[in-house]
Length: 311
Ligand code: FAD
Image (cartoon, rainbow, N blue to C red; front, side):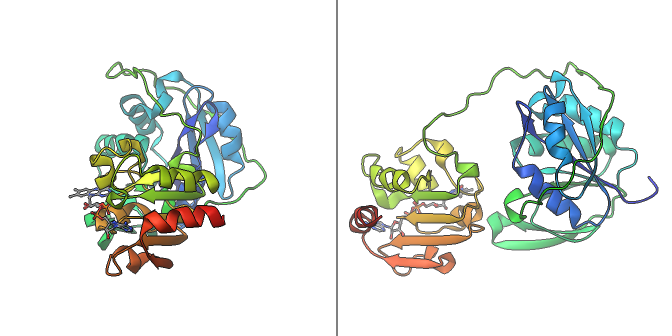
C-alpha cells in the first residue's frame, strides 16, 4: 500500500444497492482518498452498475458469487482480505451485515476496528457515539489500515455521477465455515422503519396494544412507518421489530413523532438524528422535550385523534 485509498463494501439485495451505501460513500469522501466500491453476491453486476453512478466513486469491483449473499461474514471477509492489498481504509455500513462482517475483516488483517462512526475528522481520526450516544468520543487509529463501520444516518447520501468502470475480480469462494439458512422479513403495508420519511412512534404512555391503534391511524394518515419504545415492546403493545433505539433500530426520518415516550437516552440514541422531532407528552418535564423541535404538552388520547382529524 503506497498511497491512501478507500474500499467501501456495499450491501445489495436482488441486484439493488442498499440505500446506506450512498451514505457510507459520503463518509469515505471525508477521508479524502480515492474511493473504490466492492459489490458482491448474486446479481452483483446489476447492483455494480448502480454503484458506478455514485458520486465520488473511482472504480467498482464486482464479484458475482452466491457465496457472498447477505454479506455472509466468513466468506466475504476472506474475499476482502484477498483484495485488501492497496487499501488504507476499508469501510462498511454499521448495519447487521456490516457489523457482522467488518470485525472479522479487521481480525484477518491484524488491526483494530473503529465502530459506528458519525464523523470523519481526518484520515486517522473519527467521531463515534458511546454510552448510547450520551458521550461522543473522538478516536485516533494508529493501525496502518483502518477498518471502519459507518452509521449511515449520520451522513447525507452522495449524489450521482456518470458511471465509472466496473471490473470483475476473482472469487475466493465458499469457505465452508457457515451457511445461510433463511431470513424472515416482517411484511406490512406501511413503509419500512429504516427507510421511512415519516415515523410515528408510541411508548408506554399508550397503555395497551389496543390504544396503539391511535399511533397506527396517524401513521396511515401520514403514510408513515410505526415505531415504538422498548417499554411499549416489552409490554407487548407491538412486536419488537418496531423498537427504535440503542437496542432497536437507528432511524433518521424527515419527521419523527413521539407520543407517550419519555425520551430515555437509549431511545434518543436511535432517533435523535431525525430532521424534525415532534413530541407529545403530558409531562412537561419529560426529557424528550429537550430534543424536540416541536413539543406538545398534552394528553395523547386527545391530541392524537385531534391531529388525525385535522390532517
Ligand atoms: P416511560 O419512560 O415509562 O415513558 C412513558 C411516557 O409517557 C412518560 O413520559 C409519560 O409522561 C408519558 N405519558 C403517559 N401517559 C400519557 C398520556 N396520556 N399522554 C401523553 N403522554 C403520556 N428504550 C428504547 O426505547 N429503545 C431501546 O433501544 C432501548 N434500549 C435499552 C437498552 C438498555 C441496555 C437499557 C438498560 C434500556 C433500554 N431502553 C430502550 C429502555 C429505556 O431506558 C426506557 O426504559 C424506555 O425507552 C422507556 O420507554 P417509554 O418512554 O415508552 O416509557
